Image 1 (cartoon, helix red, strand yellow):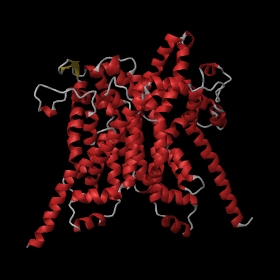
Image 2 (cartoon, rainbow over the protein chains, first blue to last red):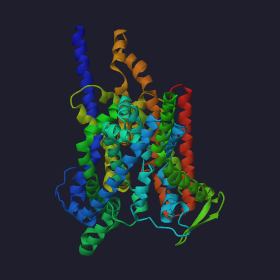
Image 3 (cartoon, chains in turn brown, red):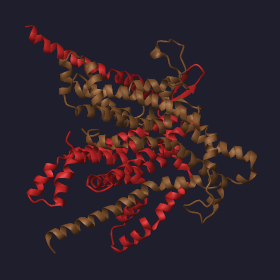
Image 4 (cartoon, each protein chain N blue to C red):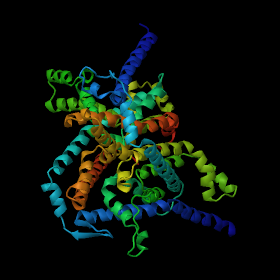
Length: 314
Length: 299
């Protein structure tokens, strides 16, 4: 065989192996999602029936309807959307500012501040959640309101304050990403702005921010996704309020209770409840993820490309 | 004279400006991070009593730590479980994500689509969904389904290794690895992204030069790609450790939270958190020490 023919065959074998592998991995990634969808569409009889594996025999939208109703989905959705958009926007502003300060200016302690930002990433938020809760429960403006404290639990203030100061969930990572991004941008941009008489803040706002849009989108997407899925902060600072995580967590038992009152068949034993909870929970999880999937479909181009080009690794 | 002073003033002002940009974080770090951290340490040594107006602390010394480690029925067991799980999965996550990034970096049709798919777990398995999955009946079923499926045939592989007379420990590890594969793949999204970014930053000319000199694909990989990715391997190890320690499906995190809300109270819960943090710190220090001593990592 000639060398060229050999090379051609080698390439074909590699391509075949790669395809098989990728299909296998895609299967593993998509399986839970497909299984969740098929479970959510099943009626309770299908879940009992051993012969029903993937395709529901009596497909029904009843689970979605029930969970939609008992999560109070539209209201919980709007609440979560407002909270997530608010915190992501504030985190984006603060983290890009701090990242810029660390990327372009050398001042005494700049390295220390960068180190501290990374340090906040290493500490699990659960570790300091109790004292943080207490400091918002008995908020006294750093001791300025002597003896009289405010209760900020149940308001948006804990989220606003933590986002504005770059100490929210995984903010250290966003500072890191933005720093790397700004470091990769040409210095001539600012120099031109300075020569034109702009101050450093104007240069940042008018020149650097527009140039950093891919990085900003990446950061925003990370921050939006993690805040949307967040369970810890929202249940601690907004305990008892109906945001999507709480709505999802409580939905199954609320549905079960409602059905219990109406229909004795659906809850005869504890075992049955497990099955039934599963139907409701899977439908609920899909409803929670769905907005993120839609967002991802629209922004994935920026997400994948910008992280590759200049984002995380500088 | 005037011309000489101006650059000085500019440099001085730039320092101040740089500091001003970072001030928000500094304020936040002190009041919303350092202070709570200090308080967490204090609470772990105390008994916390909530009153309507404020809260009180009663000093208890090491009692909470003793309780967590010796009396609490689940803490020690869960603690070791979580550490062992990390130790098994860490090398696999790093290995898999490196491998996946290499594939995704090569040219083929449908690459964009596959990339989009690979990062999907970053969105799908986080926070509240991960927490719900842990207890969900159907998702537990699907895990069993995957583990027993002939596609990943655990038993077949085991008998192959038995026949080949590999050491028992290695066989067990491989069997475990195959069982954990779905978890590993789903935990690798961000790591793949980081490796992929690194691979893209290696200039094409380096490979071309090596090819001209007669290096084989194998040599190019070990002599160019691998060393260039060294620092990123460390970044990914650290990210993986942090991610697993702070994930919502981490059993220990769940236990700490349950202890605070319904169990032995704030003090014990904080003591558990401190022990946990100390363990994370030690693991990270060990990783740093090990890798930087080998000259593997150059800052």
